[in-house]
Image (cartoon, rainbow, N blue to C red; front, top):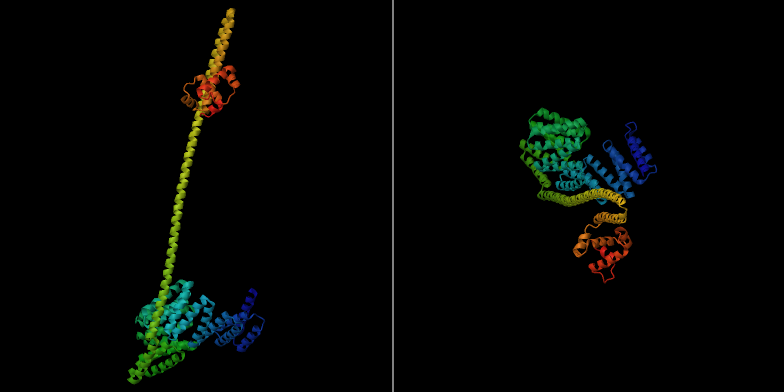
Length: 584
């Protein structure tokens, strides 16, 4: 498709070049070039698009060839069932009719194009055609239809946020209310349109708004204010080369000077406008300038020349169907005949003026316009209400989400803080336990060191005592045997005491509450029996206990029997070690 579009584009520029090449080639050369290019094998829709592009390009430079291109596009589009191409071609034909001041035909073409775009649901084109139909309806004096089209287009443009389109419709609405005599509402729309055009940097739109605002101030008899806005508009139009718009400014400035009684300045600007519209073949502008010339000569007292210009203006405006110019010219002619003393003719023109004015703004029309306005205002208020509701709903949702998020955040914060506190508490407990453990270990080491030192002291003391006693026994050989027995007994006793103390200390480190529990439950146990319970809790055998305590197996067996009786398990089959292991 990209290649086909490129060929279509080349086709458009080639056709434009062929038709605009200049006087030497002439019209026939352009048509010949068109025939040669359009006979090339192309898709029908692309050829329709090319014809429409050509018509649009040629619209201002060669109206007749543009009309020929548009008609070919219409014919081909109908044959190919190309609704988009057909709507575009009808729109161009409407613009060409409007350029030729054939407003009724223009409106007819716009309505046909609008129907197609409504069927296609092409929103941008729907809004554009509504605004174009509204503008032409305004020119024809059909204000209720004009306002209906304007508000329909305005709804779409507001939905699309198309500020250029909105500004253009504000311009049309401003003109409608100007003709209705509602100057406050007219200025409201004109100034709103001006603000949008300033925001968009649309100088053409700004110039048009300045000119229209000036017209309203002129109607309100604020001549200086009107001139100020006319000059602002003219400055932009001259700077940017908008000749047609500048000619309107000249005419309006001339009318303002006429109101001020500055006749020379008024004629200068009115004549300048008249010359330009003749040069541009602007028939609508010509009707307006002819009316202004009639006003000038009426105010100058030259009633015959004034009447001549009024008659020309009236004829031109009736041909074009420009009701506002027709209406104002009828009123001027009534005033003129009244000044001449021809009251019957004056009355006839005044009746024609009143009939036309009433037909434009009859009660039915006024009610219809008010209804359209109320419907638009209601729709707009409804949309704004819906938007407010949506915004409030969004805000409420955001608030709920924020509250939920805040609650979750707070919960998470406190939960994390709680975890941190617990972790801190656990860490402190762990540190305390670690400190206690270290302290216990240090105490244990100290006691162990003290025990070792005491053991070494006692051992040295025992060795010294044994040495002394052996030396004494050697001096008395007869008592050496008894001495040796005593020494062995002392050695055994010393070994038992030292071994038990070390065992007891370590045992209590592992089972700190065992002896307390044992004493509470069995208070009659002797120290030796408590020691035996400790050995048995560790599940030591009789042989192991004998080696530690230097007691015989028989002695230990008897001690175990007595212990079972004191523990209350003498006549049961329960194991003594198992029973003691359950005590904590």
